[in-house]
Image (cartoon, rainbow, N blue to C red; front, side, top):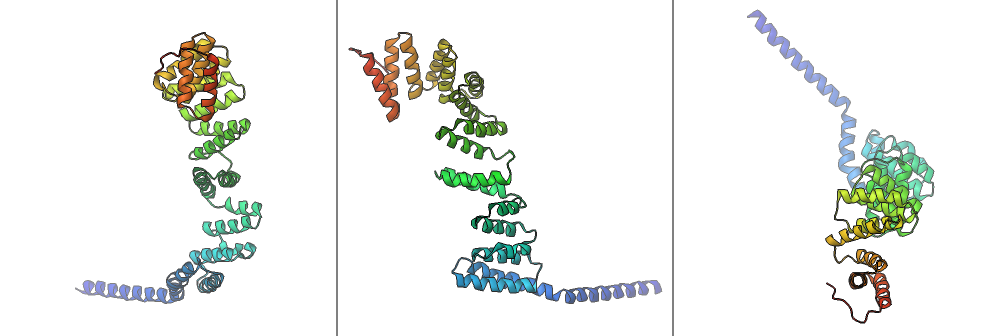
Length: 327
């Protein structure tokens, strides 16, 4: 009985002691706790609301955030928004750089401030410390490319590659877009570079066809032939694959194989204008005038304005008094 009472007494002493200890800790941290509550509920919330308004509101936001920073200097969100507000006000980012610490978003905002001031080197040095900044600019470039804004896409892609120049999975869309843009400008060496990187990351039929096309433009018919054959082996429903395969074989002097490749493509895509136009040229070389006529007729019917004009010229040159039945 004595031991039971003693045990109860000890437990009470421990409970009272622990309670007093916790009260002491709470009192000791009271200022920090109150500051954190006030910061999150007051200054930051109000400052966020004011950030989208005029310069006077930005000044108020800065004042509130600076006060919150003094009360609770360890508040990451406070420092982040204070830096962002100062940047939005156009202040010198050098003043606020020590305040950003290691917070990723604060460093990113400072980088944007340096970049807008023309100090790209300093901006890049900050962005390189921020994990994901290269991906941010990559995705921004992808969105601009999808909207047809090539200049904006190139600007974002340039920043992404300056931050992280190394190819990594997930960036192939950027390389594909860069490749296609260079192809449209007929910059074949640059296009080969970007398409080669895209193919290294994802060896699919589309990247194979694009790089094969670029090789053809550079006179690398043998290299193009290997890529185009691989592409059609992976997916035999790519009309451009048959077109460029026929072109590669023709340039290698293998005319019969070239015509067979085009005919195989026409089995899947009988109305494809470019396949028909290319097959028409080969049929004409072999003296198969009726087949050539029908191929040119389909090219003129289904092709774009430029191809239509070329196909019409071919039909006129044939000078057939009685046209064959084409379907």
